[in-house]
Length: 626
Image 1 (cartoon, rainbow, N blue to C red):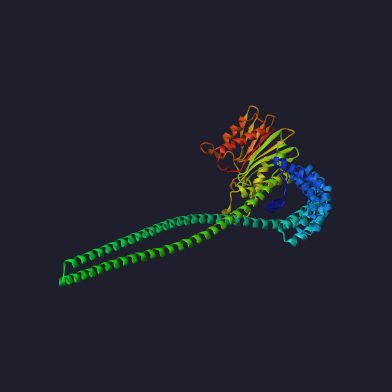
Image 2 (cartoon, rainbow, N blue to C red):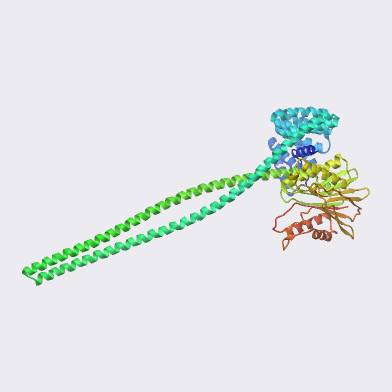
């Protein structure tokens, strides 16, 4: 059973669906633009541009699920692509037309277009395109119960997939061949091919889980390294600031030394003036002695004056020499300081170069991390598309009841909460499911739950809500815990409310695992308590037993199924949880309003309550009026 579940899951992963939606304002504007360009291209007889714009308009309608208009434009584009002999365009257009015809169950007409698409793919000799074309054609033949023809095409596809060494393709081929043999009653071939598909699925699942864990670990490591680099960068910036201050201090010291040098030069000039003045005085004294002394006395006095003059000049010269030595020492000190400053400047330049190099390395690591985060985000976005494709159409739920709404707000790109719908005979089933975890783990759990519910109802034909929950619990336990030891037991599982409505009798039957349900009639209101058990992670020694709650609905009856995301949201002026009681009172106050208006009120209340706080959980509320 476990292998079968994973086969179904991985098969759904590689098939893409277009989510039903309405034409948006942006899409309407794009269509108007392309229609104008199309008219111009037709006027100019430009077949290349005409083919381009017809295809683009058809693609917009196709994405918006407006099948009739998409089919109209694709069919108009097809003969132009044949005129241009554009094999890729012919292959793509035939494929799109086949899909649209197949959606209206016009299988035989769709097969013709798939055959043409296959012929174009073979003409391009592109093996992957040939595989996809064979798979489309074989699925169409399966729908028409042409099992032998489907198997022949699948065997051709197997040869190409082996050449491409593609595990996902081989897994899909073996799974589809197994289904054909099962329908033909060949259990031996079915078992062989189902085993091959299951083995490939298990191998691919292990590789995907290992890759996801490795990418997560690498992303966390890169994030920590970037934070450390940012801290280092800040420290380096602080060091540059200290160096800049020291540089300014050194410049101030140089200016001070230059000022001291100027002062010394002024002092030398002053001393030289004093010496000159002293020399003038000596000359005057000598003249005085010459006039008043005569003879020998005059000679003695003259000799004395000369000796005194020489002695004074020697002292003055010695003093000048000392001052010159001091000045030279100061000049040497200034030169030494200049050399020191030059060395410091060189060190600063070296440090600046190192900082620039370090900055470039940090910026490279940051860009690398951003690229990795972008790749992870793109992978999760693609997983979101697959999850939305697997979930039932909101339109199918909303149009199956008198009035209804679905308030669905994932916390991250993909969600652990999901809504589910099925129809069997006169019964309509709708469920609100809250899986363990958020994001990718929660999304995996949601796909397991969706697959098990479809299998229990569609294949096992179990229609009692309480029995469905019991089988769902057993399936989750087998899927998640069959290979675990007691020490490895996980707490994975889900809480669920499952509602069954029988239109002919207006009977509503509800079973709930760890959920409550709001019920309102014209003058009455009630909170229905579900069973305390959760799906998948109840203790092994406790026997799980679910119960049904039934009542007859009137045109005044409405019920609300929901996960714990809204009640557990923190917000309001005091930052508290919203709580289940407050949600019940809010819905009770707006019972007189249409479901669409109730949706708007609940959405507005959530945004105002949350404010600027982060959404802490996935949110799902389903309102149904009978």
